[in-house]
Length: 297
Picture 1 (cartoon, rainbow, N blue to C red):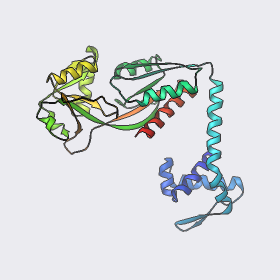
Picture 2: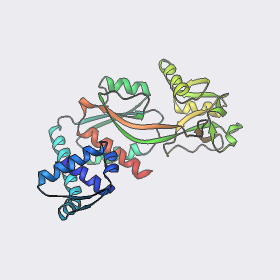
Picture 3: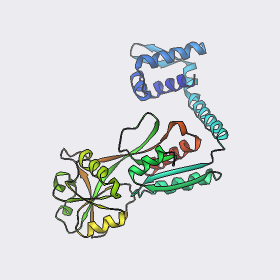
Picture 4: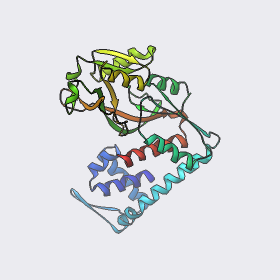
């Protein structure tokens, strides 16, 4: 019945069966059937259907005014029940991407440890491939990273937001005089990437074949080394606009990156974890992190 109430609230909020069905990711006929089943179960009419319009009965109005609170209480009950049942799993291991500089992570860690001091929280940064290997081997519980491959069925994914791709250029370069930069204007410059030797081929393939960036590549193993290479006129460094990148001064110019069709290049930043290892604390941290993104952006 809770799911049926959710569908009913969506229809009333959207003032449309069609829009509510799209929002709930089901067909229009299915959402109509679910609301009819809800009316049958309650033994009252909730919606008066009039051709393409509808209005609420008194019972429907009452359910609409109080249904959201009921769903929120049910969700809190579900979460607390899971938390109590999983108190023997009081550790959470988080892996995040090297180079991520958003303060949302720090703020979420502070909030999470304040609310759940009983949980032993460990956080470490890794490359894309190391993150995937470690979560595959159950060495970490939750990954915060840009999507690099299609998610397998065994993983739960939580989209956070799309983050623009920027490039850091030598302040003296001609391209740095522009207000934005395209992949075409960078084709004769070297792309600087951060990767260990055994992962360089994968990194090059992603930037070259998926994002369409770079024809020549220069690899370093840290963000600091990458920025020194930029200042030394070795090439450009692609970075994610986390909203908290450090000031660059006159030595480095940071510009938004566009494709030839003038569409911005973006990274899909998300949280993901294994479905068979999901627990209350993983879902709660991911939810807190998402709310930070919504609050800060």
